Image (cartoon, rainbow, N blue to C red):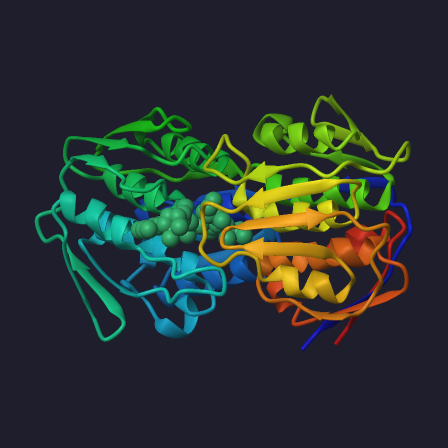
Length: 419
Ligand code: EPZ
């Protein structure tokens, strides 16, 4: 298993280019199942999860080819198998987003029930309820979701019990080819949902309201192909903002959308660091002073994203004062804390609340990644710590960050990957 070693306590300086968004490209790749012609996708990040989703599409018979740097052509016209098998879904539970498209386009689907993962049980009950409300027959047995809609799907008025990002994506995609109008209420407002809707509308779908809690979709009979460029990854960008803050460096992030990062930028500014937004660049300068600890409560977009919670836990650990972090989305998303303790962090957990007392500095140590964003927080802690940090099981990191050690090396980090 690959490991990373980091010699910490070096202020990062320089420029970073942010890659395409993992959580936008995954549902957009799945949306190609709905199309009657090829989709050309640009700004596709090179991630494990992306290659897994491509494997799922190829398993179904779609042709997927890399046509250029970060550019792929997906041709769904020879798709002839309507299942997502366990051995692929178990490595990436987001594969569940092929369910809605398969049902809408082919009237049938057999998708492995995504297991839970380290951060929580991750149920998909709302996905299934939404599709049933559109007329699908759904049975779950032997670890698989068996779904069919022999008469096609029909529009419905559906209220999500909980805000669910991939649930909203699944129902919205299914509704594009359903008969009549679908209204999704209490929908996820994440920028990745907006990007998916923009891509679908470019293919001929009729979606309004994406990015708001109420999305209205009028079904059409077919969707064409076309081109789309994936939005920048706001969580990768947020992670690099914290990297600058935690090492008291100065970074310029290129190809970012500051609007998608408002809650994160506001929190970074609350630590006392200045951030300037110029066109599609963010310039962060943390060289002035030590950061102040901040209080955080995660919530659906436009609130503070749960995917940035672990990164701010690392930052709070070496900031002055006390910061309280409340995780409201997932039931077990504090697994980075015991690893940060090994590096000298003073964090006390009480249920969904973590109270961080900033220490003067962390000390490098061997630590273990447990999930994607926990591993990001360990990298950040290692960049700030005195001495050497060794991070094991970094396959978690490779799921969501494109060449992170190369990007960090380019801005002065002493970081190495060991195979
Ligand atoms: C998406 O996961 C993201 N993944 C996650 O990013 C992100 O943390 C999460 O949204 C929240 O923003 C992708 O987009 C591929 P949810 P998703 O459905 O859609 C409950 C990362 O690090 N729920 O919005 O699976 C669920 O248990 C990953 O990039 C139900 O109860 O998350 C959770 O408590 C991690 N029933 C809450 O809703 C359902 O049917 C939010 O989950 C669905 C969800």
